[in-house]
Length: 140
Image 1 (cartoon, rainbow, N blue to C red):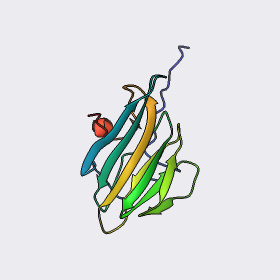
Image 2: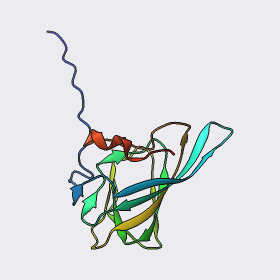
Image 3: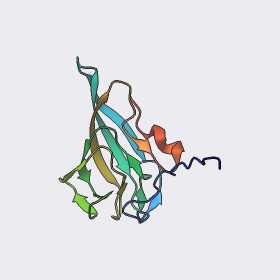
Image 4: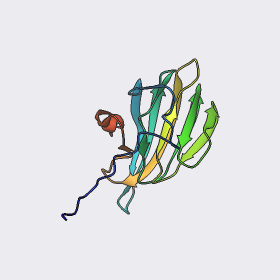
């Protein structure tokens, strides 16, 4: 009997549930700081604005990152964890390799600084749903 290769579909859920909110591109995404390190890594600080009621697509990071909420609120839906609410002044860690989505369940737009250290030129995330949003983060 011939063998059959099965390919796993990327996860569209976090903790077996679809995160709330409408998947949407951020209202704004601007690289504030881009510093190249001698070890081939880049430190990026990106100012992101997410509309109330929207969320990122389910995604993963190959390298961990941090989001600090400056205005509004965001909830991190992270594989293996309870949803984590972050309000203005709070930060949350985005560990490498885990499925996640950031959701603005508040009534106002959320303004954040996303901080990443990645290999020079590498994507900061891998989108697992709505692949057209892969290029959310631009380097200027």
